[in-house]
Length: 161
Image 1 (cartoon, rainbow, N blue to C red):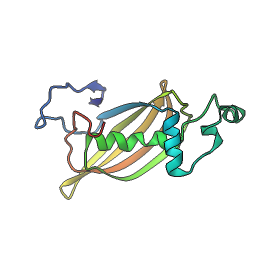
Image 2 (image 1 turned 120 degrees about the vertical axis):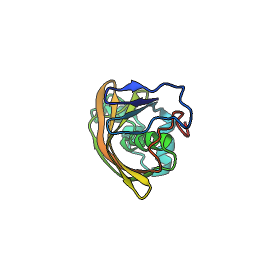
Image 3 (image 1 turned 30 degrees about the horizontal axis):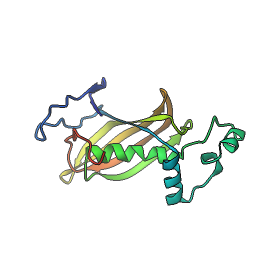
Image 4 (image 1 turned 30 degrees about the vertical axis):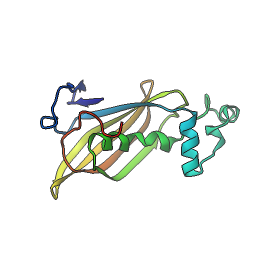
């Protein structure tokens, strides 16, 4: 779902492709996701990260966690997903991340991407975003991203979702 403005408010679902809102500083885009066991297995197969805190509940608890932990970098994939789904053709330039708290299997993680700065660059737009992810209202990931956007038009129906 797309939220716009300094006070997050839903964008109406009745925009045509020629009247979609334009991204401006202060706009916030959010995307929730609940990760499951298969997500962890698929991520581990891609990255070879088979750390037992992700797959062995007993081990995770011995290490001080409540249960199996979703890979932090897997949770962080929500940020480029939010940006690319609303701006097809966007190119990720950089991302900083600080992992604050774990996300556990079955938790809903809500990624929030907020436009901090936008400038035109060769008929495209360089956008700096605050990237935050929350679990039950608690901040789990904090960071910033830089992306090149082909347009400032916010796609109402997210691409690829």
